[in-house]
Image 1 (cartoon, rainbow, N blue to C red):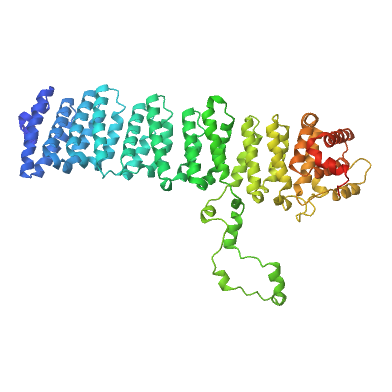
Image 2 (spheres, rainbow, N blue to C red):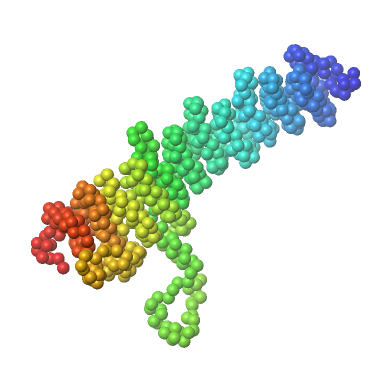
Length: 609
């Protein structure tokens, strides 16, 4: 009896019925509770309402006895129905004990908890949104429940909650994102399906801008895309497709940089669908964001370049990767060669020109500091490139490292090797000054690539080497003079052996007399020496590709310079047999090749200098 008095204002008959094992008796008790609470609402008796909810929660819903817990759940639902629109004032007290029952070992009890929460949420509607995270957390667990009845009940509650979120403009997206970011990495198929369904709903609500938080969930979405279930993969494809549509509509508000590395990772996925989807996203990012993607070029190339050699089984991935590669290459512009200088000009005072130095001999001789015009210092600095371009820095070192690694990798396909060489050529054209810092490290592998089995690879390789040998930027880089009037390195750097019985001084004299033109730089002669060394060490290369390589070089560079320099180097060749073979090869090319037509006419007419 004392226990029954403690349950007041609940009547003893109601208490007994709530503890009954029969559902019908518990339902009758719930109707009595609903009637009682309605009276308290009419009287505005909030203290009694709270007391009833507390009893149902502590003494029943959280009881050790399963039938009592079932009674508590139906009683709490009855309270909510009786409270109507006022239920929002008591939602925390109503929801928490019900959610606790979601973890009950008894599947029937979990089902009743689902049913109770459905009734609570249905009455409260938008008032439950401040408690959305705990509801979502509970539902995400029930979505993977092994009992089909519980799962079915949770789906009804889930649909109701989605309707409420869709029709409301008070959803707290900022507060929800951390939970979504955590749950999106679930490996359970049903939990994944639940997560994707919610993302699709949130995407469809105009007032909810999920795109702002895409960087936080994009990685998880790509992981779900690799699920074994076709249905889940399809749902995830749809969600990613909707995001991409939104990105294309509003590129100015997209955080491209924060998602670039995520795409780089998934562009290298073993799963074809993940890789293709990530590559399609990368294509759009490069085209929409432009130079914003440049700092991530080395990672993008690491992901894209191997795909260029895929066979027809991965044709789609190969085609998209090719577009990514071409689009990224177009982002590199001549101004990228001047960024360092632009930055320096912001911090370093300009050195006086020779005219300025000579125009103020008195100041220089007297030791006085020349006066600086303050008006000049106050002028804004002018840069040839736009502010946007200055802010985005091309990580050339990283790009060259990736390209170099791919050239050294003998397992990569022909199309990848060609793409690497096209990149190197493009960089030497667009950013020659910066590229020549890497020439000494690239030169050996470029020479070795001449032994490639593919003629197309060799042609591209020769284009790169020819650009290195003729670029004006090479005049001041590496060994040799920097004034451009004589593009030959000195004898020490060239390591040209003297012929037997010939004084070393004559070798030096021969080098000094080597031909050069303003279009040839310090690397030209170095290239000729190393090319002949390669022919000498690889006689098969000379036999099979020697004439082909020399003919192509005559098209790319000055044919007369090539023949003069090779003749000059062969004068000091110690291996006379090799020298004889080379002379024979050069003579044959000179007399028969269409590429040497102009030089033959010059020799015939004695028009050469």
